[in-house]
Amino acid sequence: MQVEDVVKAKTVPLPAIKQSDSVLAAVKQMLALKETGLVILTPSGGLAGIITERDVMRLVSDRYNQLDKVEVWEVMSKSLLTIGAARPLDEALALMTEKHIHHLPVMHAERAIGLLSLDDIVAARLKKTEQEAQQLKEYITQQ
Image (cartoon, rainbow, N blue to C red; front, top):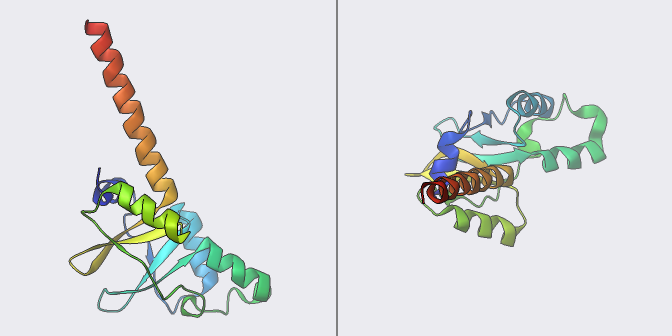
């Protein structure tokens, strides 16, 4: 299984927001999309950063009464690790575990095409395990 297989199966493969939007808008969008992170794209479609629930929590602890005034670019992570869409899912999991990150922008030909979360990986692996178990049951039944 490859990273792009998981990204393509998501309802919103590339949840994004403008860096000039407020953090409050980002929170509302994450909630609406049921995502825990959003990528921030440059006007040309390049990857500028990422904002996650962890970034929002840091802001809340420091400036809780300014969520509607602080712009996303002020709190987004700018130093990003990314992964290619054709890379194995296990490689993404290893990278996320090693670097202690929960979100990984997915790239194809220098463009962001998705955002992979640990939840996405767990769900994909669970689905694959269930499918394999079903295939084994069917095989055993036919014997």
